[in-house]
Length: 616
Image (cartoon, rainbow, N blue to C red; front, side, top):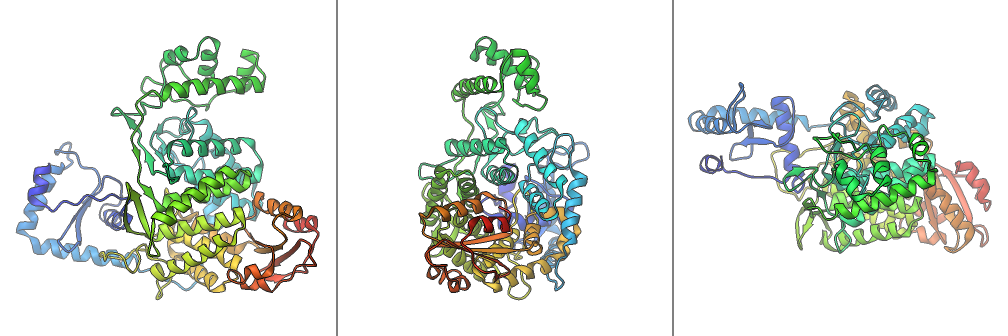
């Protein structure tokens, strides 16, 4: 295979995490030509990068009516040698079609009914037995859940919150969650979340940490807090570099076998957990003689009835929890002796930014300073190593920094800065968010039609400059940029940002209306525009207990439609939010202004009255 490729082609292997721009363009080509996409992806190009053939998996040799890769390579080489003019004509047509697909424009704004349509689509695809959406394989897609929580807040729709809780509980019960070492795997191969694809990704754990933390804000369910804490413990232990940045992924395989590091057999569990503890653990975590995955067991709680277990073993809730934790620690110690899966130790700016944002949210909600320290260390690493002469870069590994950042790198980093600001109320983070947004505008904004290109104006020239909107495993750069611009506009009073964000809900209207639930992060921005927005301006000395109490209430409540500016005096806002620098505190007392769309009520020093007005 290699010999044929080298003799007849110029072979280029693309790391899609380092060059998502190339991956995105040619994946779109594959979808246009075949009606589907996926990886591995093979695309055949003319010397000027224009595609003429594409496909996903090919067997090595032709069989069962399906062409093999060797035959395909030989046929394409022959066709190119003998009928090059036909291939060039096809490539021109494909390129022209590709360029048409990215010419997005529109003047009429996306309407609020798109939010209801997205909700109804999610409701129809919801698995009422096991949670999640659709069937196997089943992916977490945390932005579906964060959308539903905001929709619940807006419409008081109890079923929206039910779908969130059912999904979060089912994932935490399932084998997709690592019950011994914590953290979530990439996806479940079945509908009940039992058997995972064992790979663990940084971005999944970051986005799920967002979802569990917001669900805790709404419900105060201690389980969501516990899962959040465990995810952070896992990331700190197994995905954090010595400098404090975060690695990209942990492989599914060890010793060439998928899941070998994670699965157990009953005999092994009884050998580690002596006596009744082994029997208890096996009953709780579905460990059987025959196994639930290829003769082994994936630990899960899917069908566990805790009350029956407590009755059988004559245990209280606390005693059961203590015994299970003792067992977990013993199993974890033994598991650490196994061959550890390969760690992809690339440090990607975008994925690190997601984890920083999630840690900042968790730090403020759970009042945990160590989470804030983790976020600060990672952010310092990015600012030190992954911003070169003002330009955000894509990745760092072994001292090497590569590739100019894409829209995702900028949009996610803006998100991280805003979350850091809301967790600390340090205006320096808000200033960094403003500056980075201005850079993002300069590099990626389409002045003619609106919306953001995926690649910067200083990037490598490819056959097309794409605009990506679809919210797949990760929310798109355009979606995140739109939401963060609305948040930033509300915090700073910069209405030009709001206008540009609103423009995006016209530019991409046609895309979204084709399948609303495919854009659940983008629609969170539309929710922000539709909900009655409030701005809070709080003055008071940093150490004043009244200020601390009110600030804490703001931080611990689920109020995405409320923006909060906090400082000691009005002059502090001069650089970041000039509109708020005109407000005056009452005497030396803690003073609160509550505004709607920048029109403010009379200030108050009564924090209980202010909390009542905000519903916190």
